[in-house]
Amino acid sequence: MEFLSEDPTYLAGGLGLLGLVFLLALRVTQQGKFLVWALTAWALAVAALGIERLWVTDNERIEQVVYDLGRELAGSDTEGLLKHLTPDVQFRAGDRARENSRFVLRNLNLAMGAATRAYIKNELEQCEFDFVRISQLQAHAGRQSRRGTADFRVMTGGRYRGQPASGPTDWSLGFVETSPNVWQVDRITPTALPNDIVLQATGAPGGSAFSKGVGAMRPPYPMPERSR
Image 1 (tube, rainbow, N blue to C red):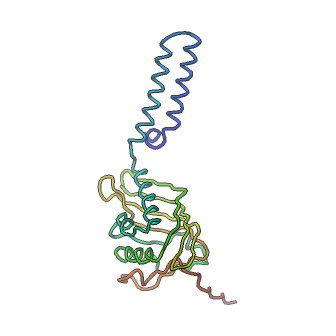
Image 2: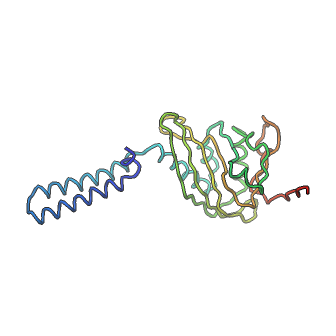
Image 3: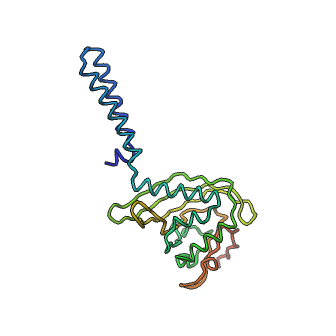
């Protein structure tokens, strides 16, 4: 039923064209039944569009959370943003970020839960956004697992720690349905970042403060020369 719940454009468009065909048949044959069929086809097209607006799918719920996160980020609504995260949310490095030698990634997967939330809150307090735009959003929800993902690009402009900062970044979020029709983020993964952003994590597993273990959005550290 995805053709109806996700994007009924083709179905509604086809019914609309079918109605026009019946209308032409009415003009040619002067048979009233074609008028009835035309009106029926158009009524079904309107119904399909109405059902799509009322039928909210899990994919659309995940998409809405991503857009809500963008609005809260732009408005510096830290508490509102944190409400979309699970208590055990985890920050993980993406494969594409790992492959970029311009990034320093050490033990980045160790930070999770309350430490991740504390880190996000600390970092957002030092950010001031002029705009946040989300694009290329693709969301998927598993019917049986009740887990989902969202991959998207974020274009931002503003200041970080008083310094101008802007540019596109790519992200992947993991979702879990924590209660009926309520989806929260349980994984945050940067998949592509500008070359002037370095992710650095230090510390041992079980560290009590994520803010001490990870530094993000900082100027690049000098890379050591390779031995010849």
